[in-house]
Image (cartoon, rainbow, N blue to C red; front, side, top):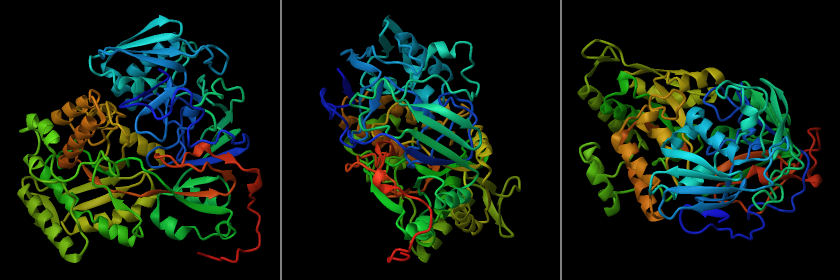
Length: 596
């Protein structure tokens, strides 16, 4: 088969010409300029060492610019929850008994040096990523028993019975690396020599700390495949790096880069009053999307004794006033995230269904008893009475947990230690948000501080779990599976660099994650994800934050865009430079519209 869907059939048939959200007639050429905060120290984005270059994209998916130099066996579509189409692999064979999957490689698949992509490269990639890859790549591969070469262009992977349904998507999404290029090189060591790839772009120039430039591969081996038609239209993609968000925004206003995904609601509402906007050279778009939102939240580090007692965590959750933040700082642009899979059918709600209770019953005694009889909900601080009531309940919980108020400060009754902690954030723009939170905690006698180190130090501290609380977000999936082990699995809790930043260790969570890959149909998967969602919510290891109903994107008006926006939102790599939209930053006569 040329394509695979987790459930049902792929949207696009064997003879499809291009994805609906791509324009196959889009012209090639021109430059796309992006930006990123911080810096990078490696051009290997797949290792668990170093910081690779990423460009600012949606909150769901930053743009892995260096990843554009690599191809995978299959490529996912942006308008389906879980379908993948052949790229390096021209066809897939799946064992009906659930023991193996076979990938048949295209004979024309080539690395940038002209060498063929073979079964040896696929097996090398699997082995090195399973042993030394970044946690999000490594964790799902641990239950694959082995890979084996059947022919020069034929690879089979063997795994536990019943997991065949999800493995083509997991394995098909792995980047394929050149075995020959990596011989004699340390995969774990950060490298600034671009590894040999096979993707639509190659690294043209690198200036560490300043910029990275990719060049389109004009003879890209897959350029005429349906999965690539209408994509990768820019001759160059340049990413510039800035020390902080204020410098980055100032640079955007001066036409230093082209596209800015805006995550600051105040800036979106009030900051786009500058000459280029008045002249309609910069356009603000609110692109709709129908994707599952990633969980964003303040993560408790459960490795710290301070957060071991759930009553303490609940008290801090009660003190967080989203409603005031949304009104005073966010211009009511956000919605509270009440699920780890917000804005989708995967989000749990109300009481558990019969199917969910069937999954929960064997976990009784391991999970909160309330999960069977109550719907989890976050506190509402919509008016002064609610705020007062929530703070009183928080103080009661803290007292029950052994904390007492003394001279306006909360003190551990046993050892006299004051209740203090630090919130680690990755950008100074979080300061006013956190200050509102810190102020509310003062009413409980809790002294919280804020740390916003520069990007590399933030990453180091996060990856070493050197924090009390951190503002974080986790990648979203339309069909969650074994990748959830990297986020919430017990084995990942003590793995430096993993995405289990909370340090959650729950046999119940582990058990439900293990069932996701064996779901026989979409309905069963949804029920199992609902249970996982409930377990995570009731663990209260994260204070859920918020999400936007659409993507806010400011663009220098130089681009053409396809008419169709898929479920995942606007796809930047389907845009093209429009010759009739030449924009310069030289002053022009003011628009009659004036300031909006």
